[in-house]
Amino acid sequence: MTTSPDTSLAPSHGTVALVTLGCARNEVDSEELAGRLELGGFRLVDDAADADTVVVNTCGFVEAAKKDSVDTLLEASDLKTSGTTQAVVAVGCLAERYGKDLAESLPEADAVLGFDDYPDIAAKLRSILDGEQHHPHTPQDRRRLLPISPAARDASSVVVPGHTIAEPDLPGDLAPESGPRAVRRRLDGGPMAPLKLASGCDRRCSFCAIPSFRGSFVSRRPSDVLGEARWLGEQGVKELFLVSENSTSYGKDLGDLRLLETLLPELAAVDGVERVRVSYLQPAETRPGLVTAIAGTPGVAPYFDLSFQHASAGVLRRMRRFGDPDSFLALLEQIRSQAPLAGVRSNVIVGFPGETEEDLQTLCDFLEAGRLDVVGVFGYSDEDGTEAASYDGKLDEDEIRDRTEHVNRLVEELTAQRAEERIGEEVMVLVESMEDDEVVGRAAHQGPEVDGTTTLTDLPAGVRVGDLVAAVVTGSDGVDLVARAEGSAA
Image (cartoon, rainbow, N blue to C red; front, side, top):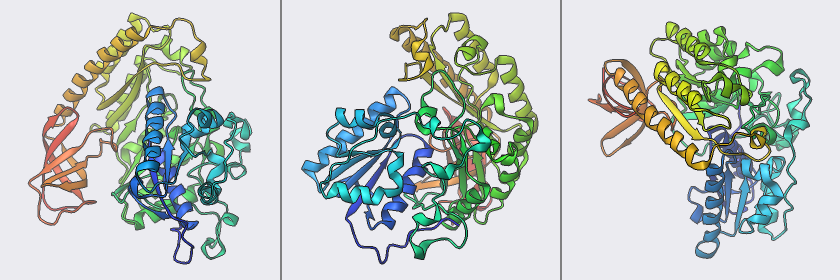
């Protein structure tokens, strides 16, 4: 079982606020850091203005995310003159990816810490507050830290944020009875919590730098995933959001590529957990057995987060990915034949080097035929260290922007139509907020934060945040729904 730090006897080392940017994987990492810091004697506060130390868990995915991370660090540094803040520390993907270069270009940050600093995060922060200078790491390709063969990988030999912590890292009175356990402290008391299945990625998509700073693909052991799930259930979590860089690869380094299919029913059976949701599936790796497990396992949301990225076979080959409209539509048909009301979301990149008008039309035709619930549209930009950055056939920024806007307009129309098609459907809505007489949650086809919400009407008495409410969809606004509650809360 995951252990909540007991800090009753720990000396106080001041207050710390964690600011998390980016994806749900970063949220898990922040909660690991929070657990380690609390275990090390720091008191966590919600507001950065009230903290002695502000730790910004940065995102280093694309240019917009990098800029947001830098802006957040600069805003936090302003608190050193206007508030109680004594130190601002950068952690996360941007810090890991750029290390000393980020430290040199951003002197406003008092330290830039990489993943290897996480096990000693409390000691690092104490030394920074004491005025000691931290020397940031020189970035390296973290894929080289583990063997090429997945079966030969030993995750305990490297630092993998959000995974298990070796028993010697825990104080004696907190050591588990057997085996390693993760230290995690929830920062958000909501009824949904991300749960990390794996970290890293073995794919070599030509546009993506994530594997270089997140490392090779490493699965968490099923016992660790289940142990953390049980702890989250005890904390009041109703929906587990399974996250990784590539969930379809789960288990390949543990000798069983079908491990997720067997794990899902066990997670759905955890006390207190009402719904399990899987994120980030690679279409080319989404096997029939996994489709069946997600579509047909009681307690698992029939929700498919499929990373199509494009539909033109030629563009996908240049991306070092696989697929075409026919194979993608066949996968969607396979899903809907088993779960007609399944939710499907995806992301696409527009303006990739060499993308022709015909390629763009192929993408648009696929999106029209696919009837997806949500599509994130990203304009291509070069990323440091990626193969695509060296490609010929680059489109100019104005053309990429025009194409991105065109696809965005199409997607807004198509996803609004898809939401309208759901009017009359019966849905189970997880209540996430109740403010000013407005009750908002998410149906099974709606993932956290980015897939729209469902506003409930005609609620029975006694409904609370965390309840699952049976309802019928009565209206839509873009991707958001309105649904009339039926009966009492589940």
